[in-house]
Length: 362
Image 1 (tube, helix red, strand yellow):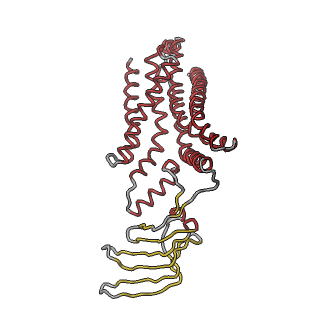
Image 2 (image 1 turned 45 degrees about the vertical axis):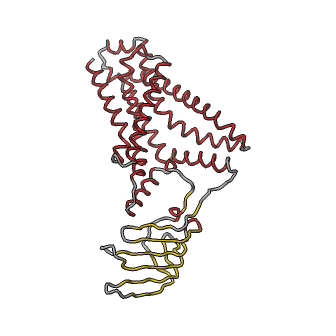
Image 3 (image 1 turned 180 degrees about the horizontal axis):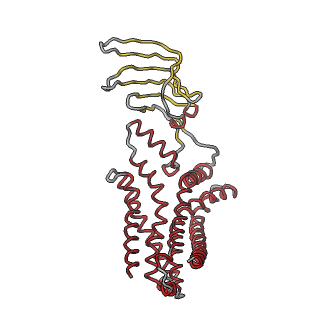
């Protein structure tokens, strides 16, 4: 089996590499034709265009890897069938299911690569391509374009409500701040009015204000202060935005933002769906290869390059349609976030197992 495994793995790797390069080239050429005219119209430099397509190639690689594995599996099994190699494997008393271990290893390898890429690399590539195109090329600007928010109200935990008139210095200074603290029965316990809330040395300090304590008997107690500490855990960047999209957020950033929304008691379903999908989509690469193995063995000689490409495209589009439907249902609150993210994978896994059972019986 070691000799057979090495032979299958070498043939599969060569075909997979050819499929990956071909799909990336096709996607890249089509994308270049659409973008290059617009870039030249904005007088973008060659270096800037090259930087854009460098990050764009990372996006394209992430998108074509699953289809490359699917297509390589179908073509490799088709070639083996035409050369009577599948028949020889069966004649030697070797189970076809056992002989397909290299294909399963390829699926695991692709999923592992995509998980690693999707953790931080791909979101950063999405952010950079949008930034280069929308800001540096279309608007001719350089540097980060950051905007401070105005008239902000937010909750911290279940009892503190903050309000700020203006925000400046990249979110490090909040001017004209008011803080309401509620008790367990959600009645106002005390209130703080400060001229500023400043972030310094990793913590937030209220400056130049007064604290109003509301007693149960209806009396008020007012005290002034020059500086008072708070337990606020937000970062300055939370009070700014860079015209970013959800696809720009890495897994740790999404997880932190979800935790922040949870503490504030705000809706977080669409962010949880996006976070769970960052794991579910890479796993689909392994499941697509898993589904292609029994399909390629059963079709055998009928799978040529054109038909294999067509089948791969059809299966990829079907998966993407179901995957998008599941995400939409999750963001709409119809399904639980993790179910919506894994909805398409559950279907593909069920189909793959069914095909494998039928193949094992035959």
